[in-house]
Length: 50
Image (cartoon, rainbow, N blue to C red; front, side, top):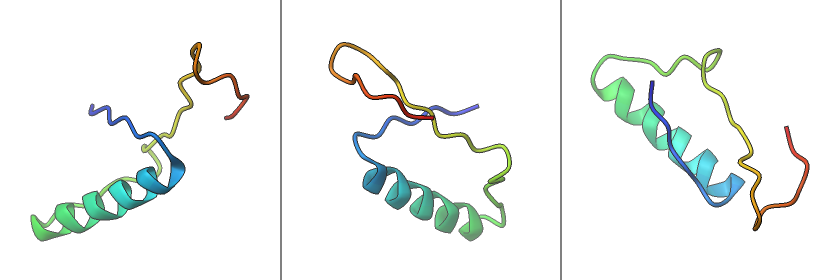
């Protein structure tokens, strides 16, 4: 399992796209059914997101 932390949804989408491209270059694929995006709520992030 790998954890990656992003500061924005735009950054997450860019990172996911780049990871998919990198995986393909090694003959692998990113399993999007197992890929999860989570919101890490803390004192600086007070929103309610899935």
